[in-house]
Image (cartoon, rainbow, N blue to C red):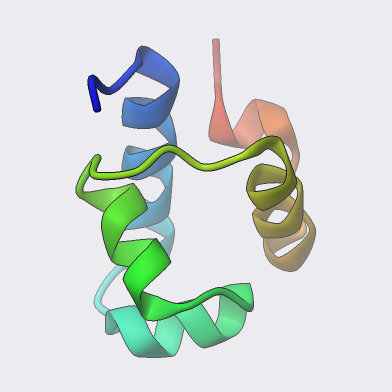
Length: 69
């Protein structure tokens, strides 16, 4: 997989939101698996539109917060 700029922005957003929390703890907050979170943060997998919507909803943020361009 070749990461896009949106993959990179999403990964940076997730890392910032996770802070010092573990993958497992933060993934519970997001309602996704810790493996998916790890893959997104490390640019090993792209998130789907559905995943983005789900994360946005769980974090009570906007798409502009995730992709601030």
